[in-house]
Structures are given as C-alpha cells and as structure tokens.
Image: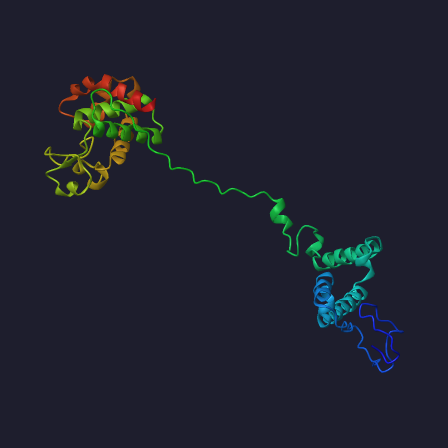
Amino acid sequence: MRDDDTNDDQYAHEGPTGRSDDTPSSVQVGVLPEPAAAPTLRTRLGALVNPLISRPRRVALASGVVSCLAVAALAGAQAVPADRLDPVAAQPALAERANEDAASRDHGRTPVNGNPGNSGKASDSSSRDEPRRAKPKPKPKPRPKRIAPVAGLDRAQMENAKAIVNAGRKMGVPRQAMIIAVATAMQESNLYNYASGVLPESQNYPHQAIGWDHDSVGLFQQRPSSGWGEVGDLMDPEYATRAFLSALLEIPGWRDLPLTVAAQSVQVSAFPDLYAQHEWRATRVVEAILA
C-alpha cells in the first residue's frame, strides 16, 4: 500500500505511472528486470511459458555470441571477391586467368628445335626417318653333301670315292677319268687309305689300314721310291688322286682305251686284267656322287 492510500495491484503491469519516484533508473542493457514477487502458482506457470524470464544472464550471453557471429559473417562477406559471389560477374575474370595460365604453360614448355611434340627434348629426325637396318644374319656354313653308300660300299669307302671325284672336279677332268680312278682305287686298296708297315712314317698320318706291299701307301698304293711323291703327300687322298689323274691325262688316246688298259698304263701292275671287274661299280658310284 502506498502512502496515498491507494492499494497496489500486484498483478498489474508495471509502467511509468506505476513506478515510485525512488526506484532506481539505471537498468542494465539487455538484462530483463526481475519480476515482482508473485504467487507461487503464477511463478511456475510463467517459468514454463517463457523460460528466458528465469534465465536473464544466459539470454544476454547468447545475444552477445549472436552479435559476434553476425559481425564476423559481415567481415567475411566483405573479404570475398565479387567475382566469387556473382557467377555472371566472375566469367570475365575466370577467362582472363585461363588465358594467363595457358600462356604460362606454353612458355614453360617451349619445344627444342621448333618441334611442337618434343616436350623439351632434342629431336633426332635422321634416326626416326631412316629405317632401322636389320643386321644381316650370318650365312650358315655349307655342309658337305653326305651321300648314301652304293654298290656295296661302306661309309669310309664312299667318303674316299667322294674325295677322288671332288679332286677330279677341281682338275676339270671328264667323267670317264673319274670312273677309271675310282676303279683303280677299288683294285689297289679296296677304297681304304692304307699306311705301310715298311714305312712307319706313313702311320703318323690319318689312315684306315696298314699294308705290307713294299713301300706302297694311300688309295692308289703309290710308292715314294718310284717318284710318286713324299710319304705325307701320298697319304692325302686328294694329292694321291691328282697324281694319278695327271699321269692318266698324259697317255695318248686314253679315252679310247679300255678301262683296264688305261689303268694299267698308269699303275704298271703285275695283274693288269683285274681293273676291268670294278668298272660297273665305279660307274655307279661316280654317278651317285655327281647326281
């Protein structure tokens, strides 16, 4: 109750007319005034209706945080360039930056020798233009023709007959001279390269048999003592053949002579008629080698 005998309405809203003159006027900004004392039921209902009324300090703190966030957002918005905020306005700036980046990339990758696809490496046009030359493959060494034995000869005999024919080829003699030479070797040594038991020196050279007919050696049983040549030379089938054919070609009309007569004219054997028996075999062997 006031001094003017007016009853106070504790439920009326307090306004400028309801304040006493001695009420302090310094109210903090942002802080709600403490509500007047009210019945317990109104206080509880008021707290449920407006929780902020019972928490004035938290409301003030929340208001301050919101203000700070608003200021920071405003400052950030001012710091963002206009071209990022406005996509339409950003297009000229982005195009200019793209041109600058392309120019810088082109300048940093200037090709050497004016070749645009070289990426800074020196080009070797000559090595690319010229085709690579494949290294020539080494030619395989010719293998000697291996002829199957014929006319009942074995491998060693056939190889010796081949040596006789090859020597005749090198000399350029006719086929008939080769047949006479092979038939003569068949009679004299059975187409084996003989060494002599009388001449131990002859055994130091490749040989296939050893004979004891004086100093006769080789395929044609030629005697060094008769002037046919040195022992080592006569043990060589090629040399012995050349010696025989050279002597045959010196006989006048040797082509028209029977084989046994032509062979005997060279060999001067004690059995001149024995050469004729080998003519057919010698002919077959020579034809097989020359085929």
